[in-house]
Image 1 (cartoon, helix red, strand yellow):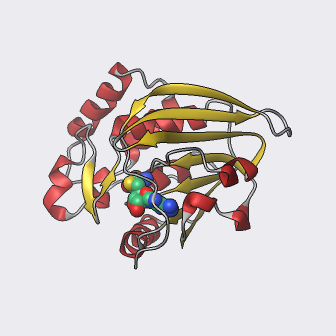
Image 2 (spheres, helix red, strand yellow):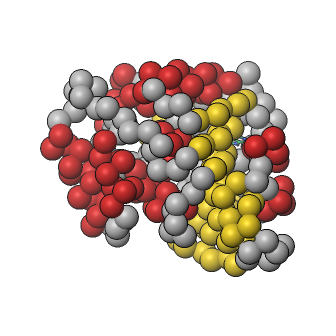
Amino acid sequence: MNSIELAGVGMTSQRTRERLIQRLIDQGISTQAVLDVIRMTPRHIFLDEALSHRAYEDTALPIGYSQTLSQPYIVARMTEILLSGGPLKKVLEIGTGSGYQTTILSQLVDEVCTVERIEPLLKKAKDRFRKLGLDNITAELSDGSFGWGRHAPYDGIITTAAPQAVPEELLRQMAPNGILVIPVGNGQSQDLRVLKRVGDSSEFDEEIVEKVKFVPLLGGLSR
Ligand code: SAH
């Protein structure tokens, strides 16, 4: 696990960040570890300079290539759900994007594997991980529709782009009692689904949490 040393990364006042945390609490985020990590993580470094002044608003923001950095509330919610069954060792994230969600996860679990299909986004995200000194992240250019077999099985899988149906391959890459948090649906409106593998069986308990709005999970790579 890592802890990001924030001193000096400032530019944004502590008060602005506190306001965001209070907003997350008001919206029902209650896991202290998740709130602490969001409070300590500088979101502005995951955005282009022209947008960085909006980093602590509770809103999704563009990161180029028609992709978005997810809204802090949804990052917090998905992370909270992922961790709800106890500490996790290895987590797979599909859709690295800016690397913000990856950075949050890397401070809460032992190891994060993350895949992104757009090469320039992946490159920028990797630079950020290096600058922040995060050494428990393995990132690769890859189509996450097939999970990432090389490092499977995963105690947790989180998808930050929405497929139209849960990819079978993700279910196969879950460890016993593993948890999958995934938006599923068409277009820009989807259900956030949570699937828990029952022991080491091929059964999964499934729950729909709330309506969400993610970019679509697309096939193939973009260089
Ligand atoms: N977690 C990101 C959210 C980025 S938006 C963040 O915190 O910034 C979702 C990302 O999923 C986009 O960058 C998009 O390119 C990526 N994506 C979409 N389909 C994918 C696929 N099949 N494999 C890997 N990444 C994918």
